[in-house]
Image 1 (spheres, rainbow, N blue to C red):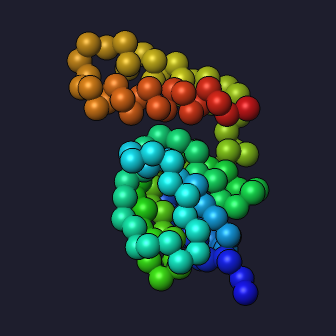
Image 2: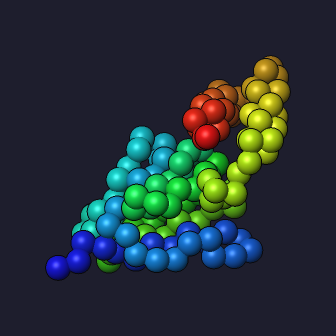
Image 3: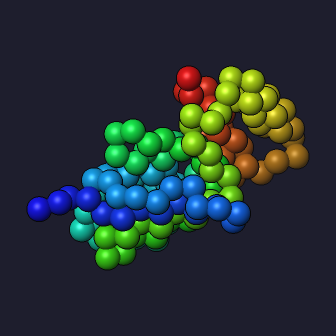
Length: 126
């Protein structure tokens, strides 16, 4: 019996990924959440991090929502990119911009929390 379930990742302008996998790991505010077939229904929010679909697909996201129900995982995000599409220059620019905003005294603790996750995640991308 197959242990796969359906996964869709959608941004406002296009479908980023559609397929089946046996697991998905998501960067949520509650921590890293791994979804397997027959997981309990779930609705949650994404923080900056890496979404891992199975063993081969990885995506960088900064925000979004997740819904899992009836073995269908739906991920909606305005800031999602396949890791294969992020080059070193783009990554470094994103880190510099985040560090610049983080050094400002005009941001909230929540923004600092999110920016720290963003910077740490970007530094881990090869």
